[in-house]
Length: 111
Image (cartoon, one colour):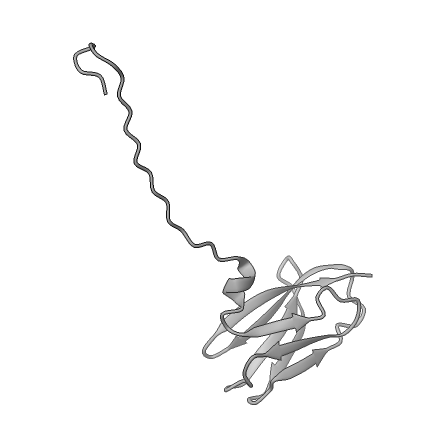
């Protein structure tokens, strides 16, 4: 701060940053499901922390949003095996959705 063009320059900084970072995995895991093995070169499993309390849908989507696989999961499902068939190596979205929630994870298919 300068007063009438005389004196010294005075700079006051009082910056305080308090933040908790949440990674994508932590946010997605709030629902409580996982894909394993990931990455995979063949079939993989989806495991829910708790058996599903309602019917839901699992989808595999390409990175541009095309639905490549879709299956309805029944109430009570705890672990579900998926064989993606002849999928090309790359990254895919695996989406779970039901009346109450929606969650998406990434799946990597390798050769």
